[in-house]
Image 1: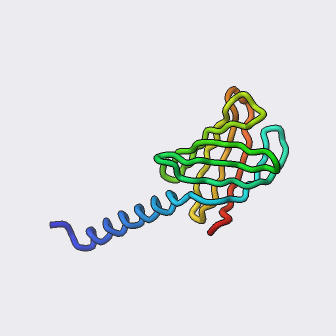
Image 2: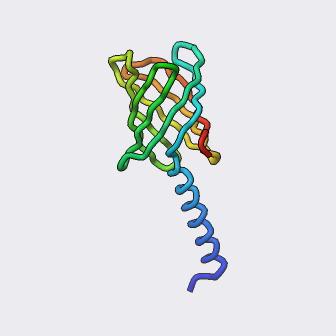
Image 3: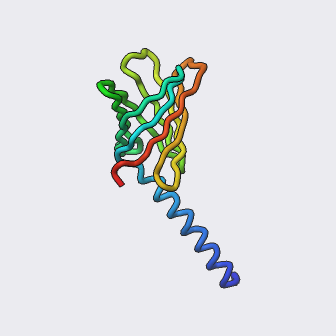
Length: 125
């Protein structure tokens, strides 16, 4: 028979792990985007994320430019393949989901030799 304290500790660990997974999975919504392009330019914009089956539809808006992508969530990592309208090649972005819902990550394009950075801050919570 397991020791009662051990059972309580195991239950607490399981509960905290479950809560962490649930909060990371709640990524639907709108975010303000702050980025640094691969060509050393800074930018801001908006991004919307919506669950679509097992994946997520992602739409960035930068002024009149709209970029679309499809993302997958794995724990606290959100990965997105995307197309920029002016580019003939796809890009890849990988974000870490922080406890407050902020996402920080990096991106590049197919065949790229540089990496850009983005931070998403929730606007709808």
